[in-house]
Image (cartoon, rainbow, N blue to C red; front, side, top):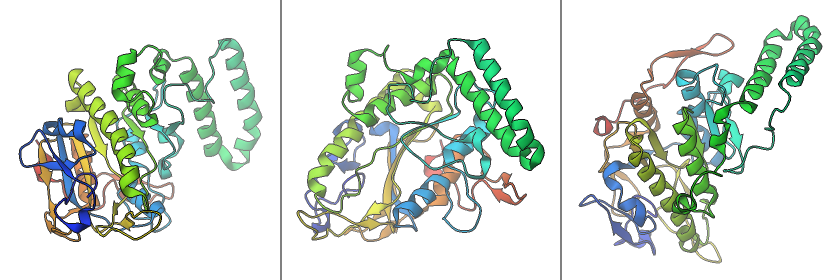
Amino acid sequence: MDTFDPKPNHANGGATKSVKTAVPGIEIAEYFPKLATRMKDVSVIRSIAGKEAAHERGTYHLHTGRRLTGAAKFPNFGSLVAHKLGDPKSDIPNFVSVGQTLSSGFLGVQAAPFVVDRPGTLPDNIAAVTDEARTRRRLQLLAAQEADFSAAGAKQLVAEHQNLYERARSLMTSPRLKAFKLDDEPAAVKERYGAKSQLGQGLLVARRLVEVGVPFVEVRRGGWDMHSRLFENIKTAGADVDTGLSALLADLKDRGMLDRTLVICMGEFGRTPKINDRPPTPGRDHWARNFSIAVAGGGLRGGQAIGSTSEDGMEIVDHEVQVEDLFQTFCKSMRIDANEELYTPEGRPLKIVDGGATISELIA
């Protein structure tokens, strides 16, 4: 109710008012006025039916399309995209996450996320290679030291370890490494994304990384668990997302990149329609029964609101969308076969997406 499905005329809506968008008849929460002007490129889905209302389980569900059950550790969707669309010989990572995220699961280190904690600067574990010959000798020495370990039965582990080091060496010498830095970005561009915002600068880095060929970038922003002080904290959080996301969409469109770049804005679950009484001021608690997300680009249709909830926000009344439907649609946008089977290290076949159907309204 405080993002993409406001209910200003019901008590459950609280202090949140709505704002008109560039698409007649579609309103979103007042905290996103810049995004509202870009609504012709954006679709909001107001009827996601989740199943997990705990952070860890919800995060896993909305990152993998799978519920946290069984022994198989399914990969982050970013790792899946890196595996399917990335270049295994790339000199920069195929999946970058600005902020901590889920692992690559059974896909292993080749598809693992490369984590950046401070957008705009090189990660602490990356240093410039000033002596290529010395670096090569050190890697050869490491390989010799690991030979006995490999012969003792750890051949696969050693191979992954050596591959990781080789990729790190390649990254340190890559001319594309500068995409992680913002030194050459005009001050006006940084300001447009939010110069003092970690999220905004992370989204600017994301644009730069996509521009040089990174298939998937995730940018995370915490601070949405507003069990109290909701109507105070949402103003800052909303402005942060509104500024950065609207700048990203405008930038991608101006550069002719939006049609081939899928942008997803979502969390791991929703918030309760009813406002709680938690001191010092009220907030909303965890709620997975129905919630909203926003998508844009990637060849998907914009300018629409899909699904609806009841007047009090408690129930989905039109077009229930399952999490699996989302992932089917993401795969369709990215030209990945959702029915393809991947194999775990134990040889177990698992479909990329288990069930669901594409959201027809989004398919252009």
